[in-house]
Image (cartoon, rainbow, N blue to C red; front, side):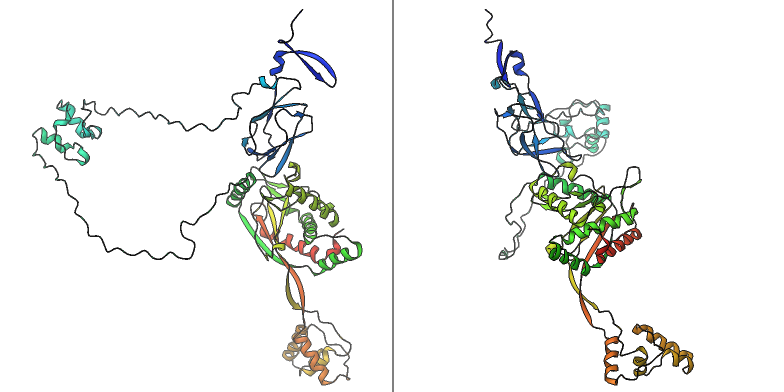
Length: 522
């Protein structure tokens, strides 16, 4: 009877038992570090969700990886057993490097061989590199004594003299050069051609008189030069943010355009939605909608700088919204923002922000975008400038709301006419000015009428007292002030594809939609 105990092994999958050759026991599936974004070159293994020997089913979360954008879960694509973990938690692994081995259920995990190239090893101690000393130049092949200190420093002229006179031992030549170096004059003196130069006498250093000791100044209460500090390793996301923003700031010609926008009507509509319809939306939701409509109205601002110095005109309007996370800033995308209502935009932003803070964003949810918005108003920041998120060509920096005073609108009354006001001031109405006053005086009266914002009517009321006229004059010359809320927005643009005129048009349309929120479809 054939003995299968050593050559064969029993395996059970889904209740079916069968035999397979022992050679198959060594067959494993490699799990490599995936490239979860186009800019990802390495990933950090945050935590393994499975342990060695655990049974894995397709769809199970194997581990969590921190990429250059966010933390993401990696799922198993097939069934098996987690045979070997090659990199523990906290390891930084380059893309496509093997991080684990999966075996078939029933295999002998003790016989799993780890590939030498992928097996995790402790960093080997740095080996001392052997540097090959370059061969000496064959300017003069002169036999020299190894003990001679001057044999390493021979000028071409000295070497020529030694060869010419067949001098093989330069230790017999008294040297006067620095560090025992043989000079041309030393060789000539040795040959008797010139008088020997006296060797320089060694100079004995004289003791210097030290200045009186100065008492050290008392330590300042401020932070000393050697203040204690703690180094914290930067996260993968933080490193990528630093690299990309440095590249953007140094390679993209930034230009900035800023203006104030009145948000009184928008705030009224926001309160109305909350009170009457119980729809809660933020100021940022309105700004996303307004920016998307402004991009649609000014398509020259919805562009990118393409390859080959080309301008890439974008068809879709996808707004990237900056969200702060514990590991850094990330910009999830509200796709098709111009086709969404403010309420829909609000729901999408909340979902994306929650995913971003938990590190659960998918690559398609933060890669791309045509325009970015960064709002620091909730932190009390009144204005700031933002760095463009390449390859985009513009980003809008939104400050916090602040209260300003502006003249209230002048309301005309039925009791006091413009003609009465000007008569009170000693002027004349248009009618009398045209018939009595000189042209110069008439023009002056007309200018005053325009300055006060009215036109003198044909009829004149005679029932107004001088006191009422005086109050009206003061009201018109010193109109009442009313409070208004404004926000400052600063648009950073890539001057290669968007000029300042286009930026000004974009901010004009943005201001129109914000100050007239009823024009935005909910």
